[in-house]
Image (cartoon, rainbow, N blue to C red; front, side, top):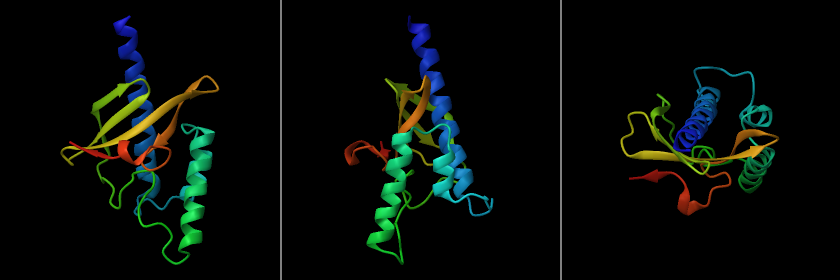
Length: 141
């Protein structure tokens, strides 16, 4: 039974790493993505419909509140800066669908991503400031 748990946790880490590192490529100013971040989220197969809806509503609300500035930080990373080198797949912990990812070369910083099953597939349902309570977000140990 323990072996199966490790395999599931490893799958959770892979999904979380793929999602967040793909997101970092999307927002990298040097990569010149053809998609807006909103369109990237809408089309992302690793995100649940609830996550997509919450992200779009959060961004829309921020722009309505301050059309000039919009949002002051990245809601998916729950941070103003982003790690250029991505997240470390070797220092990933997962329990009950909650994944804790360490940031490469940002010693002691972690990002929490919650996965759930949707239509038979594990998907990101919460990440950063999207669908994660403030007390359980980006953690520094």
